[in-house]
Length: 162
Image (cartoon, rainbow, N blue to C red; front, side, top):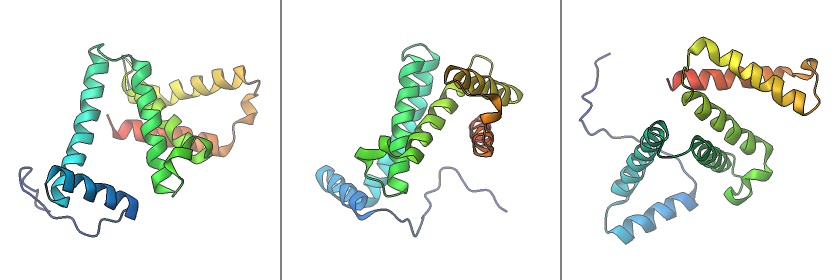
């Protein structure tokens, strides 16, 4: 397969979104006197820039790690709500959306770890699980297969982003 020129402009087709989001994008484009396509591209570019800027600012000590985790928790939970059609305002009441936020916060914390070795992630999560379980009065046998799968999923997500 031939590699693409990174500076080329490409066309994507069949992007699906909720009508409410399309209407917001349309209003944004109209208010800024730009095309809908330009508004979508601008927002996508800005989201990546915000992510990169936040990580850089945290690493340089300009933003506390706790704030970065909180932001990732909030964004991932709201994003999950949009994907499962939960009202974004109610995402914290939805267990799946809440867990997506928690997973994003855990991944962010690991990515900011001073020595993020891939082999250490599973060990770190198992220690985290053990300490939280202990505080909640759980026994190690209480770890369900779903919890173990979640640890593997978070580990895979963290490794992809490294």
